[in-house]
Image (cartoon, rainbow, N blue to C red; front, side):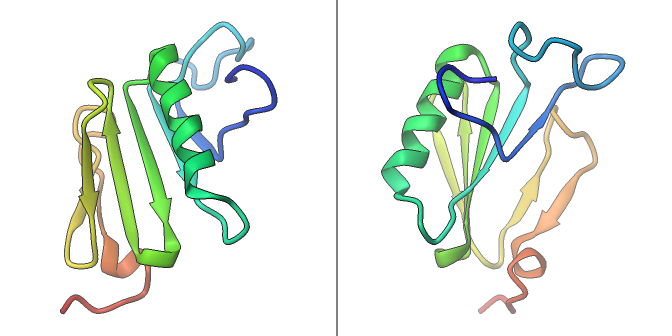
Length: 109
């Protein structure tokens, strides 16, 4: 769990046994945030920064309004994926691949 009132929309722990018993002591490997229509993007970026500072390896920010996923690494580098791109789970989720067109129910240009 991140400090204060922050709560993740979705998280992944790669350690054996799944989610730890005490989530205040263990940081997830992957955090996923979905930007809601009522949420300011800057608020989500503040959460992303906090997650990375705490040691989360990767943060995926899903932006339905623009059909994008922003993939942030621990080095605070960002890759913006759009319709026509594919989200790859890499070392965190080996074998996971998701076409953004199928996620957002859109056809690539």
